[in-house]
Image (cartoon, rainbow, N blue to C red; front, top):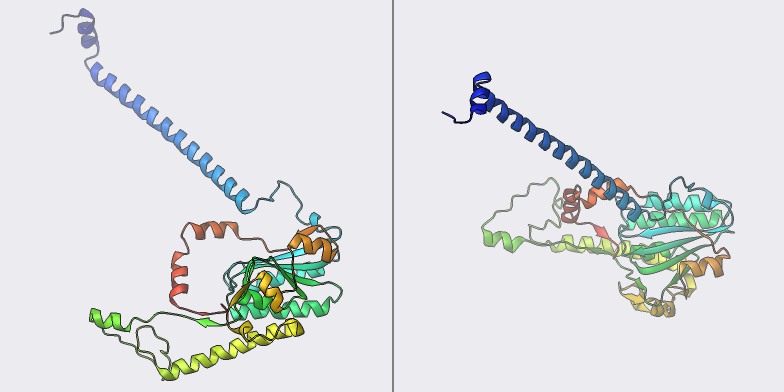
Length: 327
């Protein structure tokens, strides 16, 4: 029994006082937890908003609230179309996007000429051919608007295929230029399967339907056939380069061997015309110092999702399936 008369009186009046105190403490704790959770959600949302804003500024540094993107295209200017990265149907450097930008650049009455700025290791011969053909067509349709290619770091294989369609090609003395060739690569796992005791079961309809299968031994006849195909595509590439460069190319057998050269050496071989940057070409060749970019906008959300790993499976499938590339 308690010696404290106050506690005795409280206990007599409310025998459940201890339970009520515990409930009050529990409810108070729940309120604190809810409050902490709400603040946590608020700060998380604030952090996500900040990150998205930061990404938007990183991916599009020239963004300005309320800016009219078409206003920059008013007045005499040099139109710029960027070709960056691997040339493929599912990349930013796909033929549809590049051709759309080229047409827009030529159609604008205020553009005095077009620069195709290239930084690419190459890619699909089909996509490269599409762009090459369209550049040739636009040059004929707009004979008074020059179309020049400017190489930055790299213009190899399919990238040079595209550049060859320009009126003139410019580069930096340290740019890498060339790689006029075709490649098809893959792996062979025949001996690995044998060591692991795995039996390959391949069922096809058609004698050569499974040719170049990485788990089957190579067939000399099939290898000979595919080499013939590569030679044919290589010859198409060579013809495009010769058509574009004409008599400027030096008579050097190494030109079409797949080698690359520095910009300085490429100029001596006739692969490029001069050493210059985009700004220099715009000011001194085009006569319009102002440069306006016509390159198609990127899908920033799609790019972000890819970088977060959503498209990892697609990338693995693409790499494992092999493919024909101009490299």
